[in-house]
Structures are given as C-alpha cells and as structure tokens.
Length: 43
Image (cartoon, rainbow, N blue to C red):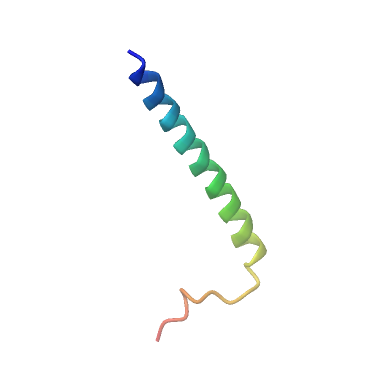
C-alpha cells in the first residue's frame, strides 16, 4: 500500500517539472523571438 503514494508523487513531480520547463522555454522563445531561428532556415 506504500507503493501507490510514491507513484502518485512521481507523477505529480514529473507533471510539475513539465509545466515549469514549458513555461521557462516559452519565456526563452519570447526573449529570443528577435533572433533568427535555425529550424526555419531550410533550403
């Protein structure tokens, strides 16, 4: 019975990290929006 709370905590931590990383990357994209993006530079 002690395994289930651990799995829930792991899922909560992963979800929290995902939200934080997405917010952080979005802020970086907004800051670097003026810089040229290499992904769009395709022949």
